[in-house]
Length: 527
Ligand code: PHE
Image (tube, helix red, strand yellow):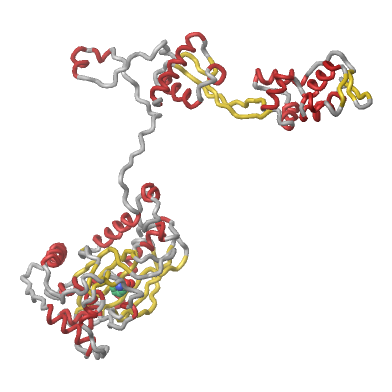
């Protein structure tokens, strides 16, 4: 039965009853209707001032099954006495067969104590012809009134498992100011006709029910990672960064590694750490690609607006073949003042396809593009990367990187440290510490540690450095241009912010959709 219909019937029951009895008590006068349905009906009527009601919390003393039996058939001692009375004499051995084992056991003791019966050899005989079964009488009274004021007796009956005490809510209902035997027809809409005819003045409008809860909405929800990502995007945008186009997960080893001066024997290029793509087996050599160019044009449109100087700039078109050769040279033989790694560089290795292991692969082609027109620039990206890791509570095979790149003339390491302090303070992390580290593509390199106020401890929060000339000069960037780079994971700050300790609760097939649906918006603490 639909709830609305059900409560409608209950509403009518309440109105009918009030016609003859006001006030009444719902648990006594409408015992067969659940208190929940009664409450819904009462609220409906009360909002129309048709009834008023008070809530009453009361305790009810209820009989157990055994006690109900006693009310029906008498107490155990009574049953023993009655059996003896009927037969005149009962053998002790036979008693359980006549009155049942329970009654025989409990009842004969009490019947002796009450001096109702006595032993006569192996048998029982009567002492008195008439008895008063007070246990039965007491329980009968309780059954009728559902109360017992004698606390000592109540405790005793509870101990003997004859009664239980339970809480009941009931409502004392009286006729309200606008009581009627039926809910009058109610108008829910104000129409033009009602206004024209004047009917609106006397119409009985249905009142708003401000106690009604709205229906739960099954709307979409942003994933916590997306919410935190948006916060980081805002920090970057506020500092004049332009977002790099990261919408491709597969890249060649060239862009992911070689162009970054990562040697081809570097352990990170191992199958253990990198996912390789088997089909297609090989990437094209780096070449201009219309889709890529369109993405870079769109990005540049933003950066030119920010850094426009008004002057006509000279564009040095990129030469991909030249770049490819220069990268080979800087690895194999050394170039641009570097002695290189001095190993036979393999083009096939460079053209293997990989799932990008870092978004620095994207920074590389953005910087290569910058070499057309070298000028101060700030780029960032926040997107997915892939590593062939063993999955555990803090590692996934795919996660998100936040990456920033700043290109300018005359940059120093001190400037990078100052910038990072500023950047991380915007997410509530102060007092950075820097630890010398190693990346093939940056020198110097620094791991970033921060004192997290919320966690009250030092946490590793990122990696950074100044890109090497071996990476920048083959692109054609000028010798005096310096480029900062830094990266951190998006998962880490999100886990801290949402108090998630297992990364698998945040990402992947084990994620609880309710967790995503019910999580609040996030604001990084700003300083
Ligand atoms: N690519 C590095 C990483 O995967 C982050 C980084 C980016 C470091 C740029 C230095 C410069 O952790």
